[in-house]
Amino acid sequence: MTEKSQIDELPGAALGWRLPRRLRFTLMLTGIALLAIVSCAGAALWYVSRDLPDYRRITEYKPPAGRPFVSASAMPSLLVDAFLAAEDRDFYSHPGIDVPYILHAVLIDTLQVGSDRRAIGASTITQQLVRLLLLSDERTLQRKLKEIILALRVERALSKDRILELYLNEIYLGCGAQGVAAAAAVYFGKSLDELTIEEAAFLGGLPRAPTHYNPWRFPAAAKDRRNWVIDRMAEDGFVPAGGAMTAKASPLAVAPYRASKSCAPPRSVASSGIGPR
Image (cartoon, rainbow, N blue to C red; front, top):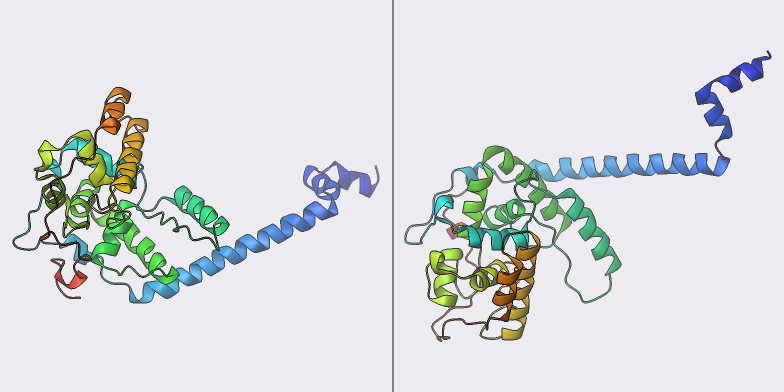
C-alpha cells in the first residue's frame, strides 16, 4: 500500500481532500466572520459595561409615597395574562432577554430600513423595567446593550414575580396613569379585580404606544390594538376562543373623558421612588 493510499483511508483526510475548494473557502470565510462578530460583540459589551448604573437600585426599590402599589399576589391573573400575551409571552422561561425574538426583530428592522414603519423593540418585560428605572428612552445601540446587560443581572437578583410586580406598578400607560391600578381607574373607573377580558386586554396593549392608543383621541386604533391582544391571549390559552370572540365584539367602553385628565409624558427617573445614584 502506498503512502498516498494510506492517507486516503483516513476519514478526516479523505473528507478534507474531497471537499470542493469553493466550499472550503466559504467555510473559512464563515468562520472568520463569526469570529469577528463575536469579537466585536465582546468588545462592545465591555465598553458599555464600564459606566453602567447600579442594578441594585431596582432590588432596593421602594414605592413612592401616595401612589398605590399592588403586590404580585393581588394582581388579577387576567390582567397579568394580558400583559404577558402582549409584551413578553416567554417571560417565565427566558433569562431576561429573548434571543430568538431579538434576532427576528433585527431581521425585520433590517428589511424595513428606509421605510416609515416603527422599529421592533424586542424588549422583554425585564428590559423594559430596566429602561424605566435605570436608563433613558434614547434609541441608541449603546443604550440597548446596557439594557441587555442590566436585564441579565436583575434576573439573577430578583424573582420573576417581583420583576413583574415592579413592572406592572411602574409602567406608564398614558393620560397620567403610572401603573395598572391608576390606569384601570383613569380609563374605566374600576379597580383591578373588576376588569373584564376586553378591559384587561386594552391595558395590556398600551405599553407599546400609550399616546397612539388613547381611546378618546384614537378609538379605532385603540380597539384594533385591544383586539390584537385578545387574539394573543386566546392563542396562548389564557382565554377560551368563545370568550375571546365575545370580548372582541364588545365596544370600547371607557370612562367619559374629562379635561382634567393629564396625557403628559411619564415622570422622570428622578421621581421614580429610587434614590440617587
